[in-house]
Image (tube, each protein chain N blue to C red):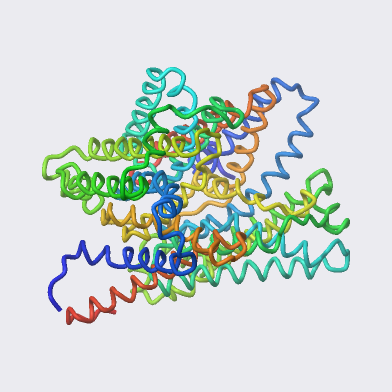
Length: 316
Length: 317
């Protein structure tokens, strides 16, 4: 049993406290009637942020400079190609998922190949890569809008036992990610590399293999997220991944993962993802216009980060 | 091999890629080799070059500004509304925005925050302000901005002169002034800057304010070209500016940046788009080509570095 005091020292608790506060502030205005629906919508949209956030978290854990900017482009390409292949046919769902996974695998491999072969910072490698992926997505999308197979669309919008299916998927992925990070050699290696790459190398760790696996993992999760998002929203759109670049980084940082790497945090991502969606819906239900909503979102993100940085002196 | 200054060597690849690309464009479309042709090829590069120099200043202190695109859009909206209708208020707003950037530098330094995340948050703020100022595309460019951007100086097109002036001014500030040395010193070794008796806080704040000033110029130049603004007008500048700095020989850490290179990088990226349309390639691949060019230039740089190390006699793994 964890005492309250110990609980409060967990880095991830703050994102949940913030999410709960925003939820209460919203329900206070809309009344309890809308609370259930709000919770459903929040869980669904948080699921997308969690999927990309977990991938981004693994990458950020690798240490300073490690960040994957190709997430939105990968989501778009995976969603587009998968929907094109399935072409609305129910029997092709597995094949569609397969294509999405392959896109993720290819992007991850290409990203790390660039980082390694050209010895360039991951930000630039994934940025250049995202230009290429985005072009491929535009080229294959070409204004067509294919509907996802009905069964798949139903699955992504339905709920099991009151919990949205997507949240269950994201939950399962989160548990796997937690086990991977905290209970496997691979997870320990990521943390070690994030804390000190030269030390990890001297200790004889397979640094390249670990980093390669991490970039592949991030791209695959982004691809799966794109696949689910395209099925959920009834088709792949070219800008569907756009907001997830900021989102994937924001949920990781607000969730209490150290930006400097070497220390990651799975539960925090959930708190941060719920928080991010709730902030937007709170500002919506208060009747603010788009402009004020954006400004408030930005200021709240910065405020949370400033507050969160205060409790961990010496890191950043 | 005779000694070439490292600074000049750094510029070699960016300059070569620009010349190669320009030659290819001329070969594909000889009519581009004229006063009007050159102006058309390069005039959209002017605001991008200014934004790239702004990004370079942030990168010189080892930070990264992910709000550059939304900030330039915000400035464009202010320019097309307040700066046109009530110049005094417009100037005050833009000065306040520069002040906000300086304050960001202070906050990032004092709380030891990651600049990526803070500027990410700010990108929402700038975007929201831009939407508030200009909910629908519109506004009008101030007469003087139009006059400057649409001017037709004799012999050399406006876009080329502007690029040269931007490169020269940025070079003088960053490479030749003592403040520029401090900024690069902060990127290279903050402790030595502090030990030399300078306030690291002030240097960082100054670098941010200077970057904001260049970004403000980018927004005004953009409106001078487009004659109207829109809240999303410059969103792609964030990635373009980062790519431009890297293309121009700048590096992510260590305060190693090149102002002239940054301007060349911005020109190269702009030209890449025209090159593709002259090739009659589908516009779908425009963004992709910018990515490909980035990758090719980085590969060339790696080769050059290898040669440089090889001729120096030292062999490093």
